[in-house]
Length: 87
Image (spheres, rainbow, N blue to C red):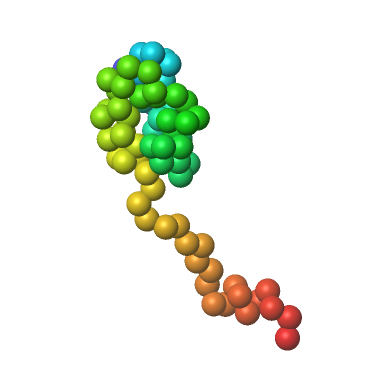
């Protein structure tokens, strides 16, 4: 008997609540950090570390881990540029 596996069979990992006071998950903080928001921005937007403050260290480290480090550049081949520029 042969089995063919299509796609992923493992479920997506569950979100972990980082800020209990405002019910903010690690996935939400990571998503905001990947979109370019810093800790201060996510704190203002989501409210983490504004009530009891116990989650501040975890939220800060999560933001710093997920921030995009490298700039993304769009590269185009020279022959494609020449074809698009009318002579």
